Amino acid sequence: MVKLLRKGDEQRRSWNIMDASRSRDAAYVPQLLAMLKSNETYSNKRHIIRALGNIGDPRAEAPLLALLHSSGGLMLGDVVHSLGQLKSQRAVPRLKSLRSDKRQWVRQNATWALRNIQRHRRR
Image (cartoon, rainbow, N blue to C red; front, side):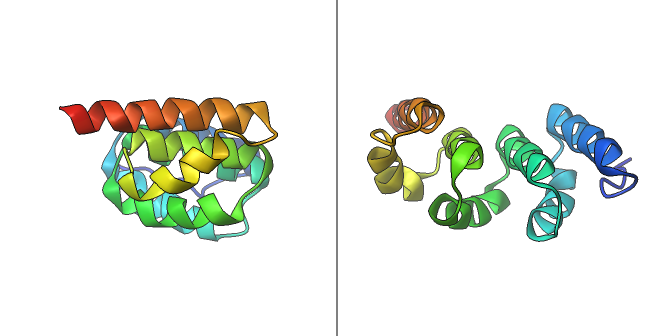
């Protein structure tokens, strides 16, 4: 049974999001996408982004691509990693440019994501 992720205080929502991430259950994707658009905290939005990557559902690609062009800081690194998990071909041009980003977290994730996407293409 899918639980309601928005229930409780910030900490409870955080645990709910992480549980959904660990479950890799695509039934949580609609809730996660709705929470991503909401006024959820920065920290929980990062958890949501990572959960979407872990679940690997294609419905997450378009919202993550939008964040790829509008996010900054640590969240950008999370978006990059999740798009790599989704093996998003549409993200490749932006990921290539992010390999030279000033933030190490973003550079490392862009390099990993590109490798992961290329591995998928060779199969």
